[in-house]
Length: 194
Image (cartoon, rainbow, N blue to C red; front, side, top):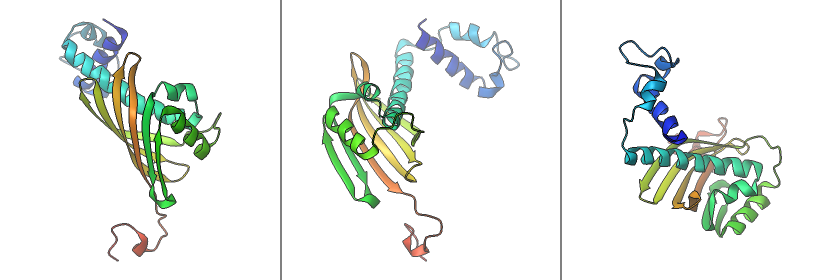
């Protein structure tokens, strides 16, 4: 059993046996045979199911590595996130930003011009609510993001492709809005009818 397979098996068993109810490997919930480790060693998933779970975890981590890469402006990390010919579209409506970039160098160059060098910077981007759709060697990942520095919220959509080096983003799209301060007049709030 590979490390990834073992981790996935333990993760799936933890979910199956009630999550936190299985907080100790030697003390599963009443009526559950064996320890979590013993149950993880018993194959309960097909190879295709394990690959699908592994892909989902890798794709979720891919968009999270992107966030870490832009927060730290780590070019090496970002190179392991994008394909060399990747395309990115950034739309930040309140700031009037509509940027279409072609190629890894153009993407990283633009990010550096917008974010500056960020060595030892605190995290700006938080990703959540990951939705992963896989179709063979292609996938789409959607994740909400919160940019705490700008009080921005948005949706990242990343089209990824499986490469010899693992999953890589070939097309990235960000639609971001800035949060309206609570003190704003009701007429300025989106969808407000007051």
